[in-house]
Length: 222
Image (cartoon, rainbow, N blue to C red):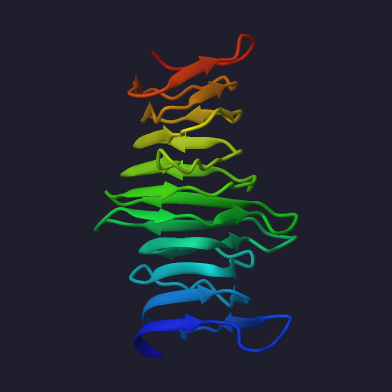
C-alpha cells in the first residue's frame, strides 16, 4: 500500500471492526490513524515501519506478541497493548523531529507483558494512566510522565539511559525501580513519592513541586 495516511475507523458495526495488518501492507504508509471502535492487530514484525507515525484516536492497537517500531506516536485517547497470552512484546518509538504527546494508555492486554522503548532525540510525553507490567527503556531523548496539567503514570521498572521527567500536578507515587545511566527530573506542582530502591547513575533535579522518599525503601541517586 502506497499512501500518506490510512484511517482505521469503525463503521456501523455495534461491536466495532478488527483489522489485521498483513505483511507488506504498510510499506509506504506515512501515518496510521486508529479511531473509535476499531482494533488494529499487527500481522507480522513489519506491521509498523520506522518512518510511520501511529496516531491513536480512540481505538485499540495490538502488538500481538511482536516487537514493533514507529517514528512517532501521538493522540488524545485509545489503547496500545500487547494482546498476547504467550509472548512479551515491546513498542519502540523512534522520534527525532519534534516532541509528541500520547494521551491514551498502554496495557498488557493479556498474560504476556507489554514494554515501551523511547529512542531518538525528541521528547515523548505520556498523560494516560498506564498499567503495563513490562520495562520502560529511555535510550535517547526525553520521556516525560505528565504534562504539568494532566498526570500520566507508569507502574513497571524504568531503564533510564537518557532523561526521565515526572511532571505531575497532583500527588503521585512511583513504586518501580529506575536504573541506568540517565538523569531524573521532578517538575510540576504536585508531590511525587518514590518507594523503590533506585540505582540510576545520573543526577536528580527538582525543578517544581515536592519529591518524597519512602522511609523504608525510597532511594534517589544524589
